[in-house]
Amino acid sequence: MKAYGKVYIVGIGPGGMDHMTPAASKAIGDSSCIVGYKTYIDMLGNIGEGKEVLSSGMKKEVDRCQKVIELAMEGNTVSLVSSGDCGVYGMAGIMIQLIQESGEDIEFEVVPGVTAANSAAACLGAPIMHDYVTISLSDLLTDWELIKKRIHCAGMGDFVTCIYNPKSKGRQTQIEEARDILLQYKSTGTPVGIVRNAKRDGQQTVVTTLEEMLEHDIDMMSTVIVGNSTSYIKDGVIVTPRGYRI
Amino acid sequence: MKAYGKVYIVGIGPGGMDHMTPAASKAIGDSSCIVGYKTYIDMLGNIGEGKEVLSSGMKKEVDRCQKVIELAMEGNTVSLVSSGDCGVYGMAGIMIQLIQESGEDIEFEVVPGVTAANSAAACLGAPIMHDYVTISLSDLLTDWELIKKRIHCAGMGDFVTCIYNPKSKGRQTQIEEARDILLQYKSTGTPVGIVRNAKRDGQQTVVTTLEEMLEHDIDMMSTVIVGNSTSYIKDGVIVTPRGYRI
Image 1 (cartoon, rainbow over the protein chains, first blue to last red):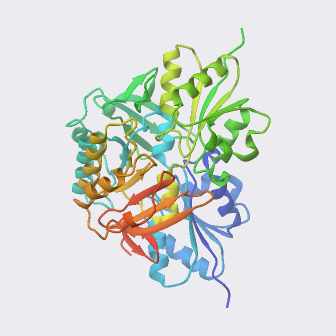
Image 2 (cartoon, rainbow over the protein chains, first blue to last red):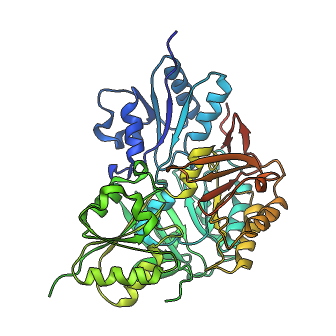
Image 3 (cartoon, rainbow over the protein chains, first blue to last red):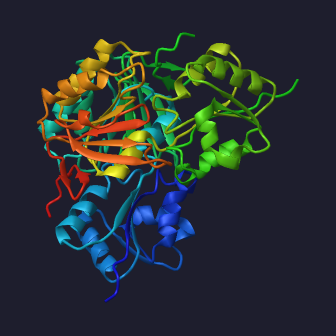
């Protein structure tokens, strides 16, 4: 009987090869098969050459993981790739769940990557120098009431707030509601950064305020970072100070 | 007059070279001077060879940044290095503040890295698949009352909670208080992961519960991740599911 192959669950970072860790490159390089959403696999450039590549559209996460298990059971080393960090709104959770449910003794390893909160922050200056939350506004898999409650808590705790999946074609109003909730706790002048395609081709950065943020384009490729009460904008850069005496 | 050199503010990731991005390596490689806390510079191995290296002890962040400005004004390209992501409890904020205050037109770039929440999560399975907060328990620069308030908000919002700087020699009781606050919102069986030296030499991982977490060693090299109400432990791994139907 053929031994099972190993499964790597890999965060490839924001997309540019410059921000993918050597551990991620190595995992993909050591794999005979790569599985992932097409957009992410395209970001890998020629690293996938000579390998079996299985890409699929969105909303087929479970199928994709089942395929990974099949491939591993056939003896292949497999990399399942997500953009950013695979452990943050990525594929790590569902992949591990399905491996465990299969009852098969398949070895797996999670390879972390630079997640959007960090890549977007780097484009804006230093907005998340202090305690922060990340919240996804996607209510496909999460009850909107729970998401709203979390936005309230983020406001109440004066957390810097990193918003993932702020908007999509079918989901337009959530970011407006989120902003209205935050305005119950944060001033209108609170710095807001909107970063589209952070640290990859097509990067666009907007520095604005909670009052004016909705006048700017926000889409599913954007990450929105809302400052805390000490954050400020200077020379087009957002800084959340951490209290050093200078 | 000599032109000013550029300043890179670089997150080197958890410490192992495997998890430092090519962009970080390149920034350091392009610099003639490297400035940082000694422990971090030691992690760079031979990447610093042939460069001027200025390392200093902790609690001298402002001096370190002033030195960076001096070096840049002398025409040097300088990398200021932090472990993890330099934009999360790192050097990006204070460095940008001081560059701006200097009034000098010094170009800077923030190079993001894999922060401890993500590297520790990867060691534990998939604990931060859903909305999470990061909170530092260090009250050197932040009022303890504010930190406690944030822990309450993290509990109230059922956020996965990533705790940075949980304990140091001089700071022993904060993690106990933090746990007691979280127990007001989370059940005793809530999964907790304690990762020491995540993704670098000396990595140690403990998977436990909110009830039992204080029976394990926690120190300043540790990151503590407390799950949300749906997190579970199976086969020594923590998973916070994201609601896929499987």
